[in-house]
Image (cartoon, rainbow, N blue to C red):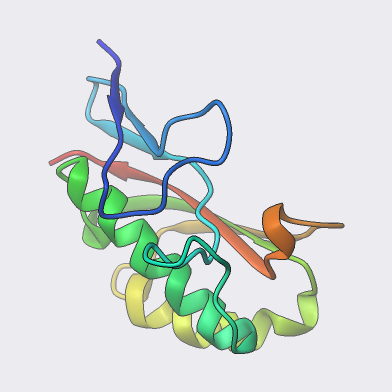
Length: 127
């Protein structure tokens, strides 16, 4: 049975979607998280490094609200506005998802919500 996950510890959805869905079958699907600061409601400044760190702060909050964690992530999809940022993002990504790294896709996109440079969504086990 599907369960909607929404937490006040992460920025609210900016459209008609949930922060995550617990499938009831042991899988959590997060919506893409962008680098919005919870307190200001704005995209963080500081370039790709600051934005990537903020995305992981937001993902952590959503995963924790669902009863999961970074250790349980099995698939990640990274959306970048510019693939030139790939190496920088990879370094930060490895801090959070480097141990027993999940499968991953990374794609360059024409644009992201609120002018973000990065968005990440994950699928995790609910263990």
